[in-house]
Length: 194
Image (tube, rainbow, N blue to C red):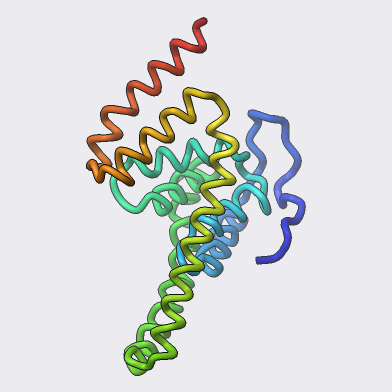
């Protein structure tokens, strides 16, 4: 992806929403869908935070967390939330349309082509390399978001506890969220009251 450019929306103060048009919503999520090979999390962060400046890192992490808690694909949920936030229902529809249009076109073309060459050793090697690159993108995006959100000892504690519970102990995601979510909110509330 190209280097970050100045956000297309007007400059705004912290806590103030930038003006984002319907065309901005569609074109932004169109870019996310177009460049989101191996997973769109890295492309979504690049477009929404770094390139367009619609959300800052903390807002992005909050919306991503909400998207993960809701049923369905978390980044599709996130696109819906961001589109709705700036342009209402029409923005949510445009965000989804922009997000899925190019991936569907590319998927149809690649699936048809891949079906003919799937057993070729070079194609198998390329597929494995692409998967490794996708994992790298995921870790890079997690690091960018993590350094903004995990900024206290308690946040680090709950991040590690979540990773151990879900990643290592293989506990169910929903159960872990239902237990750790309220506890982390209560701890955060308790700390802010002190």
